[in-house]
Image 1 (cartoon, helix red, strand yellow):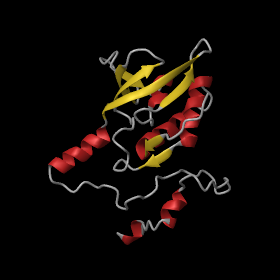
Image 2 (tube, rainbow, N blue to C red):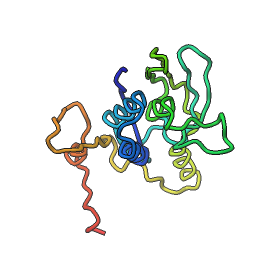
Image 3 (cartoon, rainbow, N blue to C red):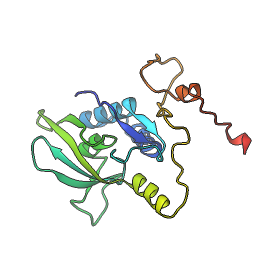
Image 4 (tube, one colour):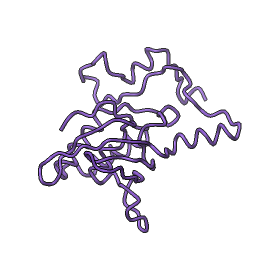
Length: 187
C-alpha cells in the first residue's frame, strides 16, 4: 500500500485513532495497516489550524472510488442507527483511509479480493472545524485562530530515541520556532 502523504489530523481525531489501535492491536490486516500508517504519518493540528479542505471526523465528503461516480458521505466515528447510507465510519477501511486527506488527495487500499482501489477526495462539502470558525466570525467573536502565523503542525514523537528527520515537523520544532507555552503553572 502506498504511503499516506500529507495526512493531517486534529488532536481529537488523532487521539481516537490511537485509542482504536490500543484497543484492537491485532485486527484485520488491511484495516490495521491503514490505521498504523495514518498514525505514523500524521501531522497533528489544533482544530483552529486544520485547513477547511481536509477530511475530519463529522465532515461531509464527496469522494470517488477509482473512476466511478462521486459518493457523498459523512465520515463518522462509528455507524449510527437511522442514518444508513449517509455515514462512512472510520471503522470501515474506506472511512479510515479518507480521514486526514485534503481535497484532490488520493489513497490506494486493498480490496477483499486482493486488488487495489483508489479513493480520491473530490470535495470537503462540510467540515465542523471550519463551520465553527465561520460561526465565531459571524458572531463577531475573536476566533482562536493560529496564535503564531506559520507555526508548524505537531508531530507526535513516541520515544526520545526515534531518529529525527529534519524534514518532518516535531513537537520540539514548535518550541524551536518560538512557541512559548508556560504551561498550567502560569495560570
